[in-house]
Length: 177
Image (cartoon, rainbow, N blue to C red; front, side, top):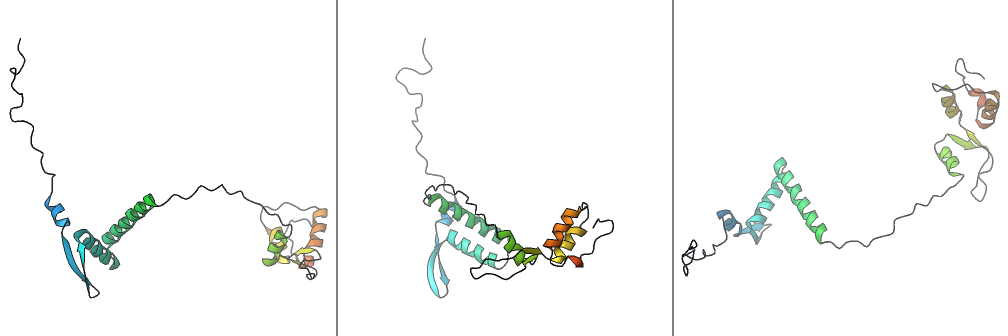
């Protein structure tokens, strides 16, 4: 029994095909050329790719939406390339939040927003002495809000001590005073 080919004869008489040169298109040849461009009175050589990018940039500055989109894509590609070669920052320990509590912070906020104020002036060391009193308008807004619950006499007595001008309050109809 003989094989497909005779002994001593190659199955490929023409031999291995010769290596073809890489497929080079006319477009690739054009992109390898250089142009001489004059910018601001100075001549310089640019590749076709650089010249097209420059022309796209100028069109984007004139308001062409397609050119703007192209420039933004160029910027994004550049940012990604720079990020890829940028050194990685050293790992840092996660920050631990530190909560500072200041008992006067809410009082100071109320004073700044003119929701409340103190009976007496500030002492020499910067601390307020006296009692914080709520502004009449703020108390009026609180008692006039819809869905309010009725207030008992003890709460109203506390309000009387804590509001700047308690007598000026106008109580809504149906509110117990």
